[in-house]
Amino acid sequence: MPSPIAIVADSTCDLPKDLVEKHRIQVVPEYVLWGTESYRDGVDLTAEQFYDRMGKDKGLPKTSQPSPGDFLKAYQTIREKTNAESVLCLTLSAELSGTYNSAVQAGEQADFPVRVIDVRNATMPLGFMALTAAEGRDGGLSMDDIEKEVRASLSKANIFFTVSSLEFLHRGGRIGGAQRLIGDTLKIRPILTVIEGKVAAKESVRTQKRAVQRMAELIDELGQGGQFRRLGVIHGGILEDAEALQKQLREKYNPPTMILNLASPAVGTHVGPGCIGIAYQLA
Image 1 (cartoon, rainbow, N blue to C red):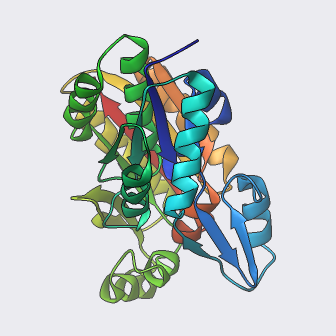
Image 2 (spheres, rainbow, N blue to C red; image 1 turned 30 degrees about the horizontal axis):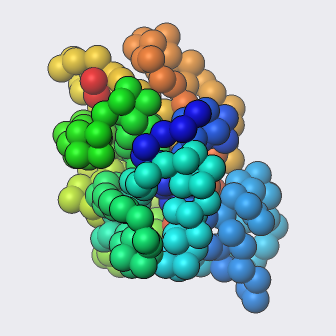
């Protein structure tokens, strides 16, 4: 079905493939660099393959952002596929990656209108903004109105997550050395979130079980102020725990959209195996 606006997001959006296809979102893969090999996130290296290898490989991966050429190709592909007149691209926080800059540079090279929004977040909150944009497009909104809707939603969406070790965030430069040292020395489980586009520690607890309980409590506190438009559980290879958390959230809130997914290889590189988090978007 023709659409005047095409939606693009980078692969840290962590949306399941069926939702990406349903909402006609073009995903631009980040790169995962492992040893001498370079993999396109979710294309050459699936999340399942990534976590399986993380459990066996002593070498640790790194990430690299897509090039402007990667974004330009994606813009052209989705525009032709959907007969769109213009493109709206959403990326993870520029504080966390150079992805936003690549997307902007690609837009400057395009011979059709391209608008790029830094959502000041990452993983599922980025995915939620892509869904918000796609729903606005399908509802007949203009580019300006879709952008207003997305920007108004930024403060309503975030994520709480915990990691088994702060080593991965520290190695990737996403959290300070002092925080990493304290966390690993005391063997605490940090509850992390994103504030002003950066990963920040919200509080700490002693065990993963308590971390999951506390994240659910934080979601409950948010839920007192209104309904959830979307909820999501993201994890790093601990499906049983993630499914139990999803079941708990669904039974309590029954949001219109409820997502469960593995963290993508690009995200998993920085949070490590064993991570689990709850993403939300308030109505």
